[in-house]
Every structure is written in structure tokens, then in C-alpha cells.
Image (tube, rainbow over all chains, first blue to last red; front, top):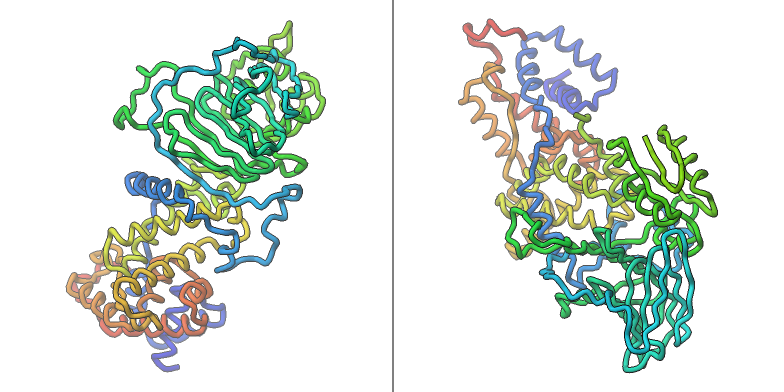
Length: 364
Length: 193
């Protein structure tokens, strides 16, 4: 063996790419030529690296997030799925797990940093001159048809207000809570849904709007067609949703004096545009609109969020004694199941106890 | 404290749940090495950081197809390399035809040279040798030693054959060995070998 071969073997060993035979050959050579041992040993030691600690790169990550947000807010920067083909891709149809999805979904994440100052709560207006209000209580849902033929499914503990005749240039409704809209197409009269923090403007499409007063976020999920969302405080920034996208907005806190962040007070809440979620087993509709079909659905949801949902769905109150439970995650779809059946199923998967008594559920 | 997060697990969490925490962990896991890698090409810490950021922007944009990527590490480095080459082309006008046309800044770490009985003088000589390796050879050495890549992975990132990777690493190893001492100084003999 010559020296060239020796160093080839050493390099193979250092890289962890040597076969057993090659290692044998190397060892035999070293036994015959111990003088090479020192150099080999130094190389070996030099090669070792300290375990790379995934130390906190928070400053650079923060800078990265800033770039991510501004980068993606430009409409031009919508990468198509095809670009993934570049490197090391298994040949698989890209959306095979989205079996039922009808439209192509280009997932775009947008972080908007906006100024939101308190806004007059439009949804408080319950009585207009010819106003109609349809309200649901916890535990019940409703479905109505608006004057133009638009169908609205209203989830529990929600309220819709609209003018009987839809006068004027627009078809307008005011929403608190959650509703699914199937809007009749009328290009001459845009359909507008007002909620506390956003307006949703549509031409003829199906989508879901969720704006409960006690929740931290407002969500708009688009199924068909297209909608344009406007935030009350930044009317010039309009966000257009495409099918299978949803928009989630952090609602401003009720009490502004509580907004104590290290960033200046003008630092705005976040707005996130993302893709609708589909349960792996029941892909008939996205998780966001399963309630319309009377299916209670959770997609990797924290127990804390689920409790709020179940309280509304079944009109009960929950007392969760075990604080740690609140962070457990659950996934599941329950169709036409009673509260007891749902809790029974959940308790099996995560081992907790519960008791239902007089409209109150205790969990520990 | 949990074990260091595993790339595959993070990949899955980002793809299926758009898990920001996993995304953050992934960033932390690869930032240092990717930064070094990019630095070798662009020779500026700020530009290198921007390019790593661009890589992670791209990753987030395709997050829903992330599960289809066989080897995320190779993917990250490949994208990083492409962005670096774009940057170089934009800033220096000459299209890059081969990696050997580039001036690759060597970034090689060495553990505690004192423990290895090597003087700082020798460390410098080693760095010099690495600096004199042909650029592609230098990159190969770096990716295997610093980034812990397999030959196949290096081959994919650099668009060369695994055999070339193997041979170039052997060349780099031998050249470095040429400056290493054959004998220890007497006073260092207290160290075990």
C-alpha cells in the first residue's frame, strides 16, 4: 500500500464511510507502520467537533421573522408548489392527502404588523330601523336565508344582524360569533360581513367567519370563490383569500392599558394567513367548517381551546382541576355524539377523569 | 430538558401542523453551520445571515410539501448554495460555471489544539493548507468535517459524484497530514495517544 492509499483510508474512516474491509486494511497498515500513527491520531482528534448546541439564536431569528413577514406580504412572492421539485423529492402527487380539496391551495404565510386602535364596536348595533337579528344560544345552531337568497349557518352563541331589505349598494350583515356563508353571486352588490375587527367582502362564494368576543382571534376561512378582507384600522391594506386559505387575526385586548410589551405601544397584533386544515381521516370538509355538518372537530387542539368549544356546543360549563391538562393536544371528529360520548372518547386517549352534573363538567 | 430535536420530527411538525416552535428549533439547529457554509461563499457575515434567512423563508413557503423532501439537510444546503451562487453572480457579474472558479473562504474549526499537542503555529499551517486547497476540495472537506455530511449528501449539494467527493476528501486529508509532525516533542509525551 502506498501513502496515497493510506490517507484515502484514513479519510474514509474520519468521514465514517469506510467499509469493514477498509478499516481492517487501515489497521493492518498501522501495525506495520506505527510511525504513521501519530499523524493519523492528530487528524482524528482534529476531526472531532464539539456537539453543536442548538443554542438560542433569538436575535437572528427575530430578524429573520421580520424578513419573513415583509417578504411574504408582497403578492409577487407566491411560490408555486412546483418549485419543490428542485432537490431530493420523492415522486408523489403533491396533494394526495388533500383528497377532497377542490381548489389548488397555495399556502402563504403573512405576518402583518399593523396598528390597531380601539374601534367602535359595530356589532353592538342590534336594532336598525328595519333590522333583523338572529341569535343563537350556547348549545344550539341555526340556519337562515337572507333576502338575496344567501344561506347562513349560525353556530352556537352567535348573532347576525342585517337590514330586512338589503338597501343600498351593498348587502351587509353584522356578525358576532361564528357563521358559515354561502353567498349568492351578485356582482352589482358586494356582500359585506362586519365583525368587531374586520370586514369581509365577497362576490359569490362559501366561507366561514369566526369572531367570538371572548376569543383571542378572528378567523375567516374560504372554501370556494374569493373574498377580500379589510381591517378596520388599516383600510388600505386589503387581504385577498383564495380557496382553502384562512385568515386569523389577533383581536386587540379588551383593556388597552394591559398592553405592556417591550416593543413600543404602536406594536401591532398579528394577522396570519394560512391553509385550511384537514383531518387525516375525515377529509370531507376542512376542520374549520365541520360544525356546519354538525361535526365537532379538533385538529391538534389544546384542551383549553376545546373546553371553550364544547361549552358552546353543549351549553355546559367546564371546571378543569388539573392545570396541566390544558396543554394536552387532541385530534378527532365527533358526529352526532353526546357530551358524555365525547368525553369518554377523549378520556380514554389521555387518561383523565370527568363528571357531568347539572350542566357542569368537572375534569381532573 | 428534551433531547436535541430531531430533523425528521421537526420536518413533520412543520409540514402537518405549521408548528412555529418546530420551525424555530429547526432554525436554531442549522443556523450556525449554514451560516458558516454561506460565509465561505459570500465572505460577509451579514450577507450570510440574510441568505440563511432566505433559505428558511423558502422552507416556510413550501411547508405544506415539506414531507416530500427526502433529506431536509441536503435540501437546506442545496438551496443555500444556489442562493450564494446567485448572490455572487449578481455582485460580481461573472456567471459561476464551476465551483473551482470561486474563492471559498475556509471555515474550519479545530478543537482545543493544546490538547492535541499542536502549537498555534501548526494550527496556522493547517489553516493555510486548507486555504490552499482547490475551492471545490475545500468545500468538500468543510461539508464532511464541519457539517457532518455523508459523501452522498455532499455529492448532491455540490452536484458532483460521490466518487469525486471521496477522492477530494482523501486529497485534502493527505495535504493536511503533510504538515503534521511525525514525532512528538519530548515534553508532550505525557499525553496518551
